[in-house]
Length: 414
Image 1: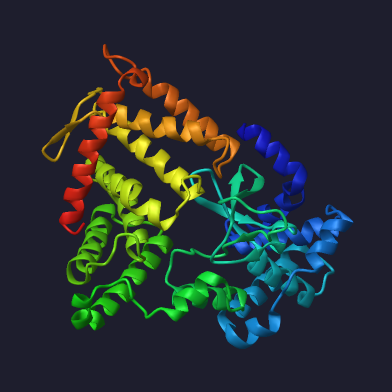
Image 2 (image 1 turned 90 degrees about the horizontal axis):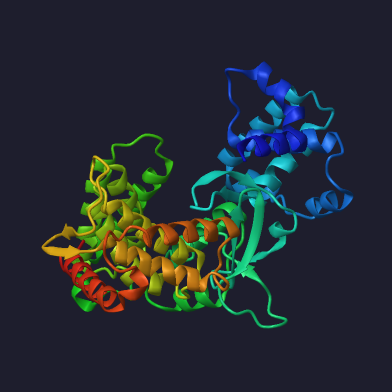
């Protein structure tokens, strides 16, 4: 598969870039500059269709707004354009290259793998025309080099398709700030109108009002920590986990901040990543269960939502990992806190539901294959016990235990 991808990319573009990158070595262009270089090189060699170029020409640049409101962004675009012109040897004017760069920044998607890990940029002239709404009805997902637009809820005939350009679970002020900062517009969707009409932090009870200034400061610090987590190349997962736990605990203890409200939703996501990176599988499993049972049903609604699907798969994968010790030995019963559970039964139950929903879910073919493979594998990890599908009563008891574990974790304000 890897060699096939190499061949495909060589024909698509890399044959025209290879000599440029070789001359640049050991210097490496930033990802945006590499993407811009590829676009210029392919355009000069007539590798795009007339239809693609026509659609691309219709995309917004917002160059005047970028120059006026975001000098750092404009400087980055201008420097990238100068570098691309120099290294490619193109006759294209620098101003034209800058317009390409601005369109790339405003209209590209974060290119991700099936586990939502960011691996690059993706610009498709058709997909770039889809409008934004925080009250979206579709999501963009990727499978290798293909982009899919999947409905996140039933869409009526004649209803416009909307995607969200940003994380729509964030508070309205943060959403609007991000949209204005990158895309230069104010969202007027029904969700924004409703959220703007409600008092800020209306989800907090009256007991939190005395500590509101402290909570607002903690909220700002939490978002700064999240920004740090997303931008850091190398971090100590143990220290990061402690900082995330401290932030969650403060928001929950002082203000009884709901687990379904940001920034707690993202703090928990990052905490799970850090715990697993630190090999604390048990704690990561409990936090993933909190997310699966208490957070996602409210934060993302429909069970078919791609984020809910991914988090369900991750819970199942962590449950399977919980069964193995450091030496690779398999144990079907594990102690979590004071409760003995059978993680394989829980994993099989979650995966069975994903398989059941696969024809309706907002997921891509490779994700479905991955789920199917792990689902089949869990059926063969039962020792001398009955296969999971014949242990319905045992599975129900396991979920009762999980409810207890989750409630205990939340009572500790974690």
